[in-house]
Image (cartoon, rainbow, N blue to C red; front, side):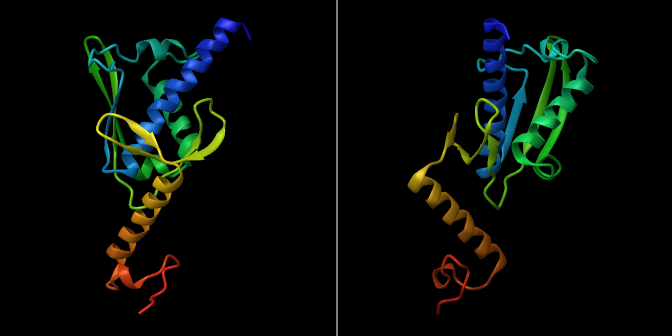
Length: 169
């Protein structure tokens, strides 16, 4: 592979991962909406350049298939139908993909890293960024998610349950 095209491929992987880690972070936090086809400064650039990068069908449907494939690779087959609502919207400057992400009661792992290689990670959303959790922060996050699941599904106070779910009173 030519060095320049390899750099472009790596940038594409990083951009794809950035979108998908944001989806992961939204699912792990309070949900949210990702708009694909808009720059950070809110300028619409659309998805047409992405459509044109496909060899066969250079259209919205091909992009939708590509997006669904990436979501499946990064989260598993059932994630999209469970947590995502997707809609294309046409603007004069180009198409946008609106992705509404529902919050998950369980922790959501992203299954690939920035280069598309297998690696499990958990991201959460801050005000304007998605942060990868590690160490104590990861343990605290998982414990909190676990405690919240028990609160929703049980009348036993969380203080009386150890981490294996047993009543200790």
